[in-house]
Image 1 (cartoon, helix red, strand yellow):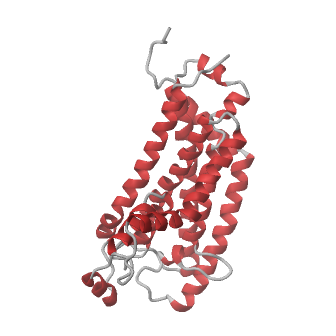
Image 2: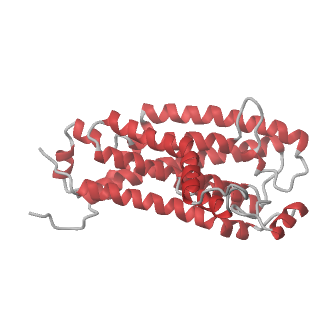
Length: 316
C-alpha cells in the first residue's frame, strides 16, 4: 500500500545527511588536498609567468586559469583531468553501497520515498562539488589579488563565475555517470571500473572514434583530399563528449579573443588579427550550446539512473 504524502518527503533530510558524510569523509579530504596542492602550484607558476610577460594584459586575471609553466600544467588543464575523477569518486558507490550494507530496505521503510532518496543523494554530491570548486575559485582569485595587487574587472568576475558554473555542470555529468553505474551494478568495484572506462573512452579515444566515423561517412577523394563534410562530421561527433563541450566552453569564456569554435570565416580571422576581444555577452552566446549540452547530458543521465532505480526490487 502506497504511503500518503508528497513523494519528496524526506528530501532535505537525505541531502543534509549525505552532504555531511561527503564533506567529512576521508575520501573527500584526500581529494581536496590533491586539488589544493596541485592547483596552488599551477596558479603560482602562472603568476610567475604573468609578472614577466603579461603585466599589461587587459584580462590579467583570466590568464591565471590558462597560462602554464613547466613542470606544472595550466589550471584549466589540471581541472579537465581532476574534475571527472572527483565526480566519479563521489558517485560510484552512492546507491550500491546501501545494498551492500543492507540498509536500503531500512531507509525506504522510513517516511522517505525512492524519489527523495535518489534525488537527495545526487543533489548532496552536486552540492559538495559546488562548494569545493567555489572554494577553489575563491582561492585562485585571492592568490591573484595578493600577489598581483590588481583587482579583477567586472567582466573578468563574470567570466570567472560562468566558468565556475560550467565546471560544476561538467562535474555533475560525471557524477551522474558514476551514480548510474552504481544503480546498474550492485558491486562498487564494478561501477567504479565502468565509470573510469567511460571517462577514458571520452578523454583519450573519442577523437580517434570521431575521425574514423567521419572518414567512413565522408571518405577522402583520391585527388582533392578530404571533403569539408568530413571535418564537420568529425567535429559534430567529438561534441558528443562532455570533455569537448567543457573544453570549448572554457576556451570561449576564459579567452575573450576567441570568436569561433568551429569553422573560422574571413571576418572572424580579421577580428582575431586586430586583437579585439568579444564582449562577455557575445562570448556567452558563443558557448551557450556547449553549456546547454552539458546541462542536458546531466539531466538525461540522471533520468536514466532514476528510472533504473525505480524499477529495482528492494529486498529486506
